[in-house]
Image (cartoon, rainbow, N blue to C red):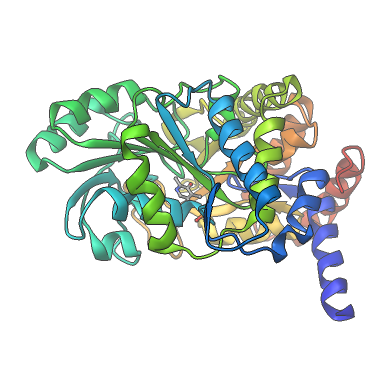
Length: 407
Ligand SMILES: *Cc1c(COP(=O)(O)O)cnc(C)c1O
């Protein structure tokens, strides 16, 4: 026990003294983390509120019902049209539940290619999605490095998929759910919007909403939404039965009611003015960071960002994405290696680096800090052999993080 407690303390310190710039990470508020660690973890509640397989669920039912209600409320949705399922353990299991609930194994699905910004669960051959379903893919335009809706429509009309998946993991531009919906209607496909990365921006009205365009929306709760490590599904009422059955008893057993309580709190927090401010600042920070980096000779894919992340193309430097992430981590700056669209390198040593601003914005950092951090990143990447530089910057990073306390 002491050994594990010590390691946890070391990890918390790493998070506190480092700059978390992994686009899919955030700092969940301590009050919400306390719910994750509550005795709700002890309770079995297979089934759904009012229809449980175990006794003693009177309070659990209220908690889960509240989480569903708040999930709809944060997107401004009515339960006359929409249904929320807050039981998925992760974004991946939410997506798998949608595929298994609404389609048959072997059915054709059109999704974004992993190497161009899509997620593993959008049909990668190493993922169950790609093994169980017949995925075809779209990517970005080679010149603009943005989604080309005319091209996507062409592919959709040719392939006639049963479902189209939109949403991405490494795409820094606005996604038009309205345009995807028009394409899906033309080929009679269901539309799944996977907003795992941008959910917080959508709730705060800083990115167009997938509602009412998508038939089903999946999301994680721990990326821009800033909550516990979990997920949820919202679907049209006519699909509710299939979605609920796919989660339980289809894929999961007992739901994690401690996580569901934490999700309810996260959804309530997401409706506060404080949260909206953080989301606005997240985008301002990403834009400011992209500008600083490009002024210092680093190219961002598609020339900038509309959301919380940017993708750096490192091909003009003498470093690949993996080594870049490793040396930045030596200075306490955490990012991740990523392929860039049409990457000539391998996924193991890709040419790109994905950088996000959600976590630092949660800590209260603004443009002034982004300019400083952008300069540090550019300096380190341009002089990969300079270990002294990284030691110096690591100390400056610690000094900076002290001004933005967390945990
Ligand atoms: C992160 C992500 C997921 C998966 O979430 P996990 O909780 O890691 O399983 C699914 N889709 C997209 C687009 C994501 O970015």
